[in-house]
Image (cartoon, rainbow over all chains, first blue to last red; front, side, top):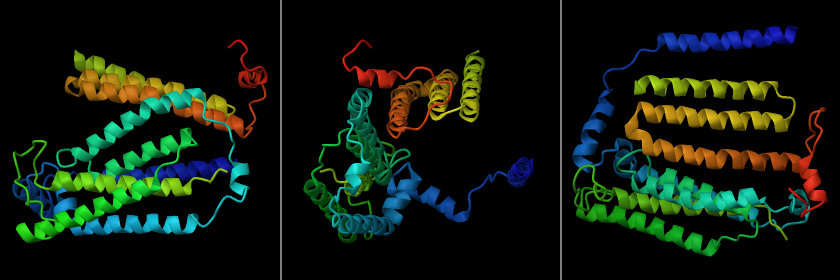
Length: 233
Length: 112
């Protein structure tokens, strides 16, 4: 009885909180000055319809580079910590040796290519609509996770993944340096012609940076997932 | 007219979603809860997205792709979850009579 009373009181107070939020909400009809200048400048200067990607990859491209570096450090740290622990039979007894069922295997065979296509779509349309390198890379990693779950024998080539990731990172920095030399500054996207606004090949270097970021993030997350998998032997 | 039909489909989908939530609360064990959640929410999703596709014909193709994706993933994931729950021997509700998976494992290759 008292439990019910407490539950009712909790629900009531939550409702009160949300009601006050809903009552106090007034829609903003004009942008704040900073947002307004971004909304005006990104299509004008960078030629990208998606303002967020324009900000992330050009105005705050250095910040994005830092984020990717943090992710790289996470991957390296996970590798350092987890690769020291070979299976001591503890993990393998916990894991059931059962294969994934046929339904799951067939579903994964259909879904993994779809997921990869979707990831490529997200990455390559980052400058046009919602999306970008980080999100697409995470989608790639989810496809890898599905593969790892369904096919326990599958061994991703860690060497290839780390080489691809390093090359993508180096090219990202090189594109930034090219912006420093030929355009306005580090990671400036105007090293290529801006092209027609809204077209697939437009917005200068932003699609290239998106693709590099997608490759890098996808490889890094895949390496992390592989490291976290309990070793079976 | 299309707006009305689309809205009615979305409402139907919402009713199915509601029944999914109700099933999660009222069903006795993991397996029946999973079934209620999966079946009702798959149909609810499909109806909501189809309603939206009728409401906004311009989005139709993308919404159909999403419907296909949901139809592919939702049953498969709940199947995998249910098998995992069975694998770690989560008990069934008291009144459960038939355990088809155990039968299938006892005589593999038997009739389905």
